Length: 98
Image (cartoon, rainbow, N blue to C red; front, side):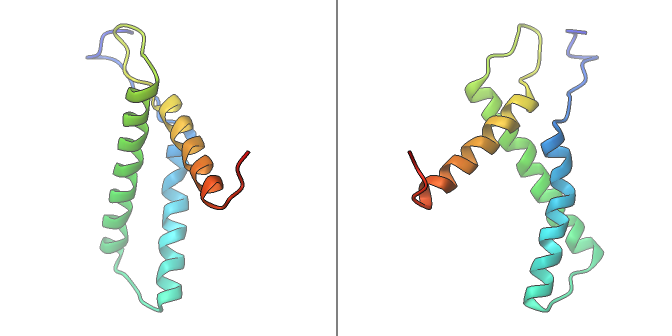
């Protein structure tokens, strides 16, 4: 439906997978620093990471993708573009540029 009151936002797979990858990264950070966070601390950090992931995908979609009238910006397109941009920037920083 194009009615924003009943519309459902589709979460991109990259963003959905981000949570598991983020928790693994938090686990590695704890191990390397030889510290232990409480379940609540890990959850709070994860919430921040997931919020940033959503906001990044949304802002990128708003910047680069024009949604059809009555539709939300595409989180899938925004997340794909944001991911590509991040990899391209890292490649450029490492001198791997064409």
